[in-house]
Amino acid sequence: MGRIRGFASDNNSGVHPKVLEALTNANNGHAVGYGGDELTHRTIQKFRELFGMDTDVFFVYNGTGANVIAIQALTRPYHSVICPETAHINVDECGAPEKHSGCKLLPVQTDNGKLTVANIAAQMHGIGFEHHSQPGMVSITQATELGTLYAIEEIREIADYAHQNNMYLHMDGARISNAAAALNCTFKEMTIDAGVDVLSFGGTKNGLMFGEAVLFFKQPTGAVKYIRKQTAQLHSKMRYTAAQFEALLSDNLWRTNAFHANKMAQKLAVKLKAIPQIKITQEVQSNGVFAIVPPQIIAPLQKEFFFYVWDEHKSEVRWMCSFDTREEDIDDLVALIKREVAETCQHP
Image (cartoon, rainbow, N blue to C red; front, top):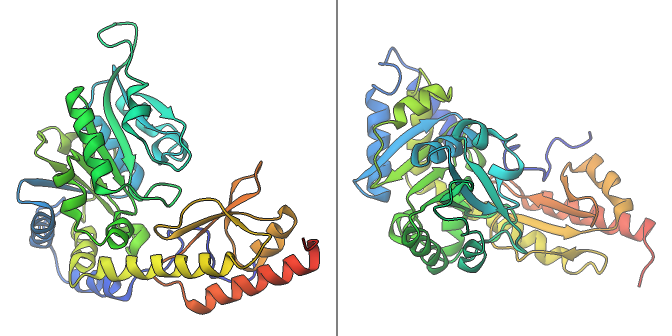
């Protein structure tokens, strides 16, 4: 495949050295399993210091598990979940949310991956009619799958509308650190203060080896420990998940990692804008760049820097930056794009 480094996904990056160190430190002697250890309790407390003391924290293996648990805990099988059509729960989770929760997903077409009150309202029909699934939750992603961001006020507006219509607001925060770094806000300001009820907090895309967390804000969670077990997301040696999050949440490592990934995406976008044959399709607000490129250069580029085609019909690709993306990676990719364009494309 050529170069090992690439721009396919921030899942492809390595593990941050401080996270690896935390795993090594946790690997000392025995500890009570299934979250009964001191390290897990300490890390939960750290989450509460960031989000509020009435936050309930449940560690899980992966993002799909986090989303499934979040949805299942606050809905019934006759509910529906309103989400963007590009949402991870709709596109990339193999139907797991619908299988485990029994809920119907109601995907909404958007131009930028963001829901609005208006297009949520368009799904609010058949209320009280037993032949229709009943809207029970709105799910938004921050940052979105298209790399765009909800402003805090936009989140609050959606939360207010959801609550007025007896729905919960779920936030898929697989890249929440990138969003908070870009908006220069705290996690709390963007979630519980804005009306979010449950959050899937991502770590793997920001320097962890594995592990995500589900955070419930002022919601009943007595059943969640059973749901987590039935969903095969209960880690017996939970201290290793907790240790990673303790490192990530200490000394603002989460912000440092995310800020760097965002900065690299901005650098890439600036350089791409100087190439007439490349058209950036979304505002670059976090750590992803989406662009339409000449189709004939995609395969040669992928041989050197692997990345994914986002929309084959439009020849739109996605380039993701990570906490360990280097400036020379950006420079080398852009140089290769220029070379391929010069060799295969006709200049305007």
